[in-house]
Image (cartoon, rainbow, N blue to C red):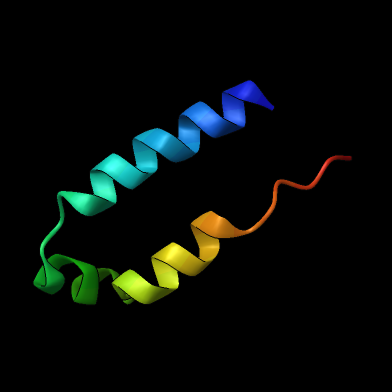
Length: 44
């Protein structure tokens, strides 16, 4: 669980550093990223 939270934190930092143009090139938007990052972590 902690590992996943750290991974998401790193991803947030990387995505926050990207410009709108870079996000468009990836086929995503800031709102889609925020939605995915706020989803609860599912346990197996």
